[in-house]
Structure formats: structure tokens, C-alpha cells
Amino acid sequence: MNTLRVALVHDWLTGRRGGEKVLEALAEIFPQAPIFTLFHFPGSQSAALERRDIRTSFLQRMPFLRKRYRSYLPLYPLAVEQFDLQDFELVVSSSHCVAKGIIPGPDALHISYVHAPVRYAWNQYFSYFGPGKTGVFGRLLIPPIIHRLRIWDVTSAARIDAFIANSRAVARRIGKYYRRTAEVIHPPVDTDFFVPPEAEPERAAFLIVSALVPYKRIDTAIAAFRGGGRRLRIAGDGPDYKKLRRMAGPNVEFLGPISGPDLRRLYQEAAALLMPGEEDFGIVPVEAQACGTPVVAYGRGGVLETVRPGETGLFYDPPTPEGLAAALDKFQGMTFNKIHLRIQALKFSRGVFKERITAALGREWRAFKESR
Picture 1 (cartoon, helix red, strand yellow):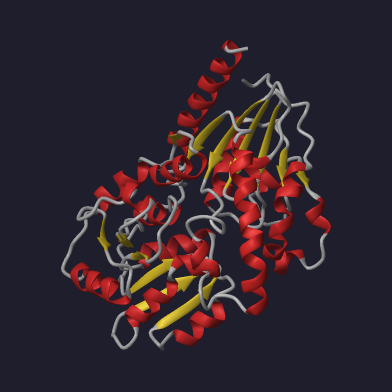
Picture 2 (cartoon, rainbow, N blue to C red):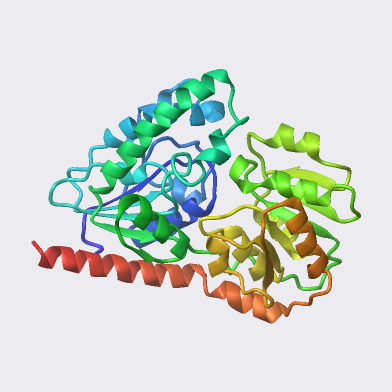
């Protein structure tokens, strides 16, 4: 496959989250492939990606893009359809929003690795835009915009030759919204970097590593810690920061965005990683387990595929402050084997991902050529 003319497509490059980890691995598999993306904040990616041929859309030139890029959502479908991909034989999109909607050449194979069907439009619509979440203008403008986005999203799915989902939970959504099947290949986790500490630290505080956005349910965790003696540390930033900060008591510490060795140290020192929201896959709980740290999570979504209850973590339901508080009480009486935590994480290593995705892309390419 190294002789093919390959293009990689990703929604946008603004940070190093799970989607970017997939893109990094794909870029290693296809070292000559250009990367098409709606917009790119220089310096936000790994050095290897920053050196690549990155081609952006007209949105790159829009005013106030860094602070207001979510406001340009109505233009995303138009922008992604403007990429000229007619000279490529294989197009691989890495999509959690609109990257899957590119228009490949008529003789090209398009395989889409889907992190999630557009969250704003489907399963997380009410988390973002439900009652009390928007102002007067938002209540008037957002429903028709999202309605049109849903129509485009379903229509554009017909341009994809094969789907790969990052979890069984996402594969079910692909089946529900697009009426298509998807192979499941879990995303890569850097288990060579995220490792247990050399000496066991005092694990006093619980930890959340997350974007501060509505569907992550950080407010549920803060409420569960209100008035108690437990400590909570929150690493990450996002539009909900001010609201969450007002809710928090003195036992909740906001750390801002954390990465690299500092993030690894936070995992290693945490009593447990908390996941109060439903994740499509959730790389963070695997990183925590790789560091020897158990997970307490709302028992839905991708976490069901990465955490073994009673062995590497604990699930709770319903997703309320009371439900989480009860789970934390139960957790205090449990013990976890660091070896079991590490073994579980290694199932999602970078090497495993590259082996599985290379095999899947090869199968799809051979089947495509045989059908011509």
C-alpha cells in the first residue's frame, strides 16, 4: 500500500486528544500522505505531525478562529467539501464531526475511522443545546442549523466505502444513524509513556482529565464532592470553566490543561480516575490504567470496553451526584492489582492499533480492487 497515492483527512488540529493520536499513527503508516483539515493551530500537534504537509480550508483565515471556532459550525460541511482529492487513490478520514463528508474521486476508496457521529447533532444534542443551555437567539437559530447538519451528515455517509468505529458503542450509533456496519478498532494509547510510578506515591486525591464541556458531566462530580472530605483535581479547560468553578468547593482544584510528564504524574498520584460522562471510547481511562490507577466511571459507552469492573475499576449508575458518591464509598473498601491494571491497558497499545488498522485497510483495498 506504500505505493498508493493516499490522503488523510481530519476535522481540525487544535490539540492532542484521542483523535489526533489516531491521526499520528495513520501518518506513520502513510509517511508521504498530505493531511487535509478544516483548520490547524500551529504548535498544537506533535513535532512529527507539525512537519507534515498540512492543508487547511478557508476557515483557517476566519477572524477570531482560535477562540470562536465552534461558532463556525454551520460552515464546516461546506469547508470540508472544498478539498480537492481527485488525484488520490485512497482517502482515510479520521472523523468526529465532518471529516467523513469529503468528496473523493470516483475511482478512489474512502475509508472513514469514526470517533463519533457528530455529537452536536445526535446523542449529545441536548447536553449542548437543551433547555437552559442557550439564550433566546440560540433557541431560535440552533435547531434549524442542527436539522440541516443532520441531513447533510446522513447524506454524506453514502460517500464512504467502509466504516471503522473506535468502539462498539460508536459502531451501534453508526448503525442507528447511518444504517451502515462498521468494524471496531480501538484507538491507540501510548503505553510506553504512561507507566506506573517507580515508587508508590500517596494517592490522596481523585482525578478528572477532561475538556470542560457539558456532555462530560463534570458538574455531577463536583456536586458529589460537595461537603465531603474527599479531594478532587480537575485537569483540562473549556467553555464551562467559569460555571464549574462557581460550583466548586475548597476541596476541588482546577489545574488547567496538563500534558506530557505532568499529566503522567497526575495519573500516577491519583486515588482513582473519575469518568462521570459517557465517552465514545475514552483514551483517558486507559492512560490511567497504564499508570496503575483504577477508574470509577458512569457505566455506559466506551468505558465498558476498556475497564474491567472489580478488577481495574468500578461502574456506577444512575449518572447523578448520589450515584457517584455511593460508588466512591464502595471504592474506598476495594483494592486493585497494579499488574492487572497494566495488562488491561496494554491491550490498547499503539503497536496493537497499527497492526489492526494496517490489516483492515489492506483488506478493504484488496476487496475494492477485486470489485473493479
